[in-house]
Amino acid sequence: ATGYNWIVPAGASIVSGLNTTSIVVDFGPAFVSGNVSVNGTNACGSGPQRHLAVKAKASIPATINGPLTVCANDAGVAYSVTGEPGVTYTWTVPTGAVITSGQGTPSITVSFGSANGNVKVVPSNSCGNSGAKQVAVTVTVCARVFGAIQNDEKVITELVNVYPNPAKN
Image (tube, rainbow, N blue to C red; front, side, top):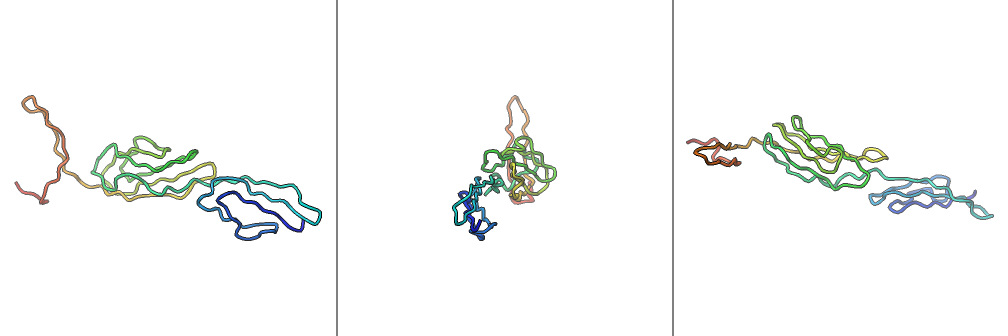
């Protein structure tokens, strides 16, 4: 062959090497999957195309949705990312916190302890792990009033803030 015709999939572009035996390709953020194809050419015509199937790693989530400040020992706190088909999501939470449901999915539920830290997610697919996305979560001490039954009446549990802090009387 005296030349080469390269074709790259949507979302990819040839950076260098056009019409040579090798190319450098930029797979942009819009790339999902497709074939890189090539065929040789000479004065007699073109040879058959050869194809290489390529697939992108999972995208790094743009944001993690969920509260950035929680009360110590809060349970049922939800975090999520926009999911992609065929992607597994591996979550980590601060020391003392526990993922109570959703590990491997785009949404988790967390029971917190008392330590600040990061909620982090790493997407992965058959091509491997993508980069991580994380948010810092601050755990605060929240005053709580606990209910009791007095004179056959129920007292409802509520979250309260007392000011000034410290308070007197």
